[in-house]
Amino acid sequence: MDISVVVPLYNEEESLPELYTWIERVMKANGFSFEIIFVNDGSTDHSWEVIENLKAQSDAVKGIKFRRNYGKSAALYCGFERAEGDVVITMDADLQDSPDEIPELYRMITQEKYDLISGWKQKRYDPLSKTIPTKLFNATARAVSGINNLHDFNCGLKAYKKDVIKNIEVYGEMHRYIPYLAKNYGFNRIGEKIVQHQARKFGKTKFGGLNRFFNGYLDLLSLWFLSKFGIKPMHIFGFLGSLMFIIGFIAVIIVGASKLYAVSHGLPYRLVTDSPYFYLSLTMMILGTQLFLAGFIGELIARNAPERNNYKIEKEF
Image 1 (cartoon, one colour):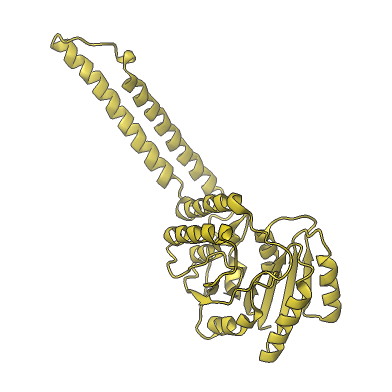
Image 2: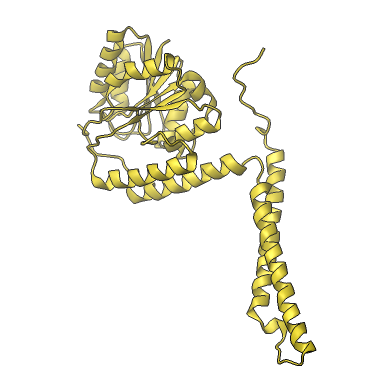
């Protein structure tokens, strides 16, 4: 099979028939063998009934229905598991992503040998409350991930080589960082294509506002930390713990030495325990010890993790 199109959706009953017709027209015009996997993420409208009607019209339609709303990452994970195409396309169901982009995305994956192509909606029709946080988020994501050629990490329109989606694990809210996830798994051929963005035709945006914006930063920091120190937590906790303990220990010596100097020279002095620096030093030593122990415990957990030797092998003879 040439292409699998994975469409996560939530309350998009009005747009689904038009989206299906549009995708089918593009596929048939280019002679692609294809499947469309609609993942109904706990919709409360009649989206699932629409998907069932589309299935009755075409065997290319496949559907997954969640009992409740789990989020876009869960929808993509289940869609990726069931995708069989050599190239996998993801797009949103709100008709803001154009299926006319599919042939070029397919060509870039199959002929230019990219692992992943992310769309860039250079001209957007979203409100400022969505576009400004998105620009700030993408600037941070580029700096943290090192993928400097992407302008829109969270664009719903992406194309993947099949190996990519069968190796990465999308969980939590990590759908925003699929290019970063792919890079961490060794898929470095990541490109970008300027794509057409259309105004929403039906319904209203599901953008989560400031809550989603801040959660996105926390998820990015989590992914960065796990990619850097997930296997060797002692490298970060041990280093910080040792540094804090050494600084605290040196500070205690300085406090004690200053008192001994004052006593030996007949200068006025006060008890070591009367100095706030003494307690600050002890606090740093205690925190340093705790951080070091946290790193040690992290090493024990990593050592016993079931996936500690789960390495991704591309080829083998």
